[in-house]
Image (cartoon, rainbow, N blue to C red; front, side, top):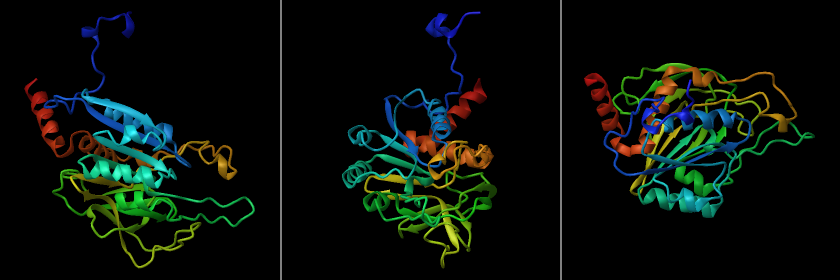
Length: 290
């Protein structure tokens, strides 16, 4: 049997359906930032690259942080899945300028977090300082705490919104984020919670009872989409907290079909902006006519 390397280019079939590039004529530059602490960033990076791999017009650069800001700010879109990765004020302002100029920013899960872990000799309290105000201003939110991971009902606030149209409210097991929020967010999914957040300096959810899960905010000519779900953790991801091997791989949040569908649409938006739905519709028409 011939290997891929032995085949002529026209003989190699794409493993994934082309869902996005029916109308695309130009290269689309995506910067993917995946890194940080206490999460299985290798798994998340692979999942996001797999989604991006469905688009033959995408050219993607991959980063662990925001240090290559000259590449990030020149991209058509930035997708970030991080935890406690803190861009500098200069980097944050450069990203804000890019979004105001029309770039798209898809921020996922704990990208909004700056977390100081306790020392071994201290009480096990995690602090969430306001350490990157320029960045959280762009995101429209700042992570404060979360309750213990447990099944949570995610409710659809705008059932006609393209990112969730046809997706019902659903239950998933994930981190529910208590956040400091700007007042200019357009909330698409949310959840209800009032209660304790053990282990965090902000130890209670406070007076807010509804917590946004998927939301957007406009920044100049561009837009930010934030999706807080998507926790994942491997066996060795909390070794800095004194647990060398948890013996458990936690990807239960990614097992939700609804989560994956919404994430797929968010990535499509990052690639094509408001034109993403037209490209999906064209793909569906092509498949029906095949």
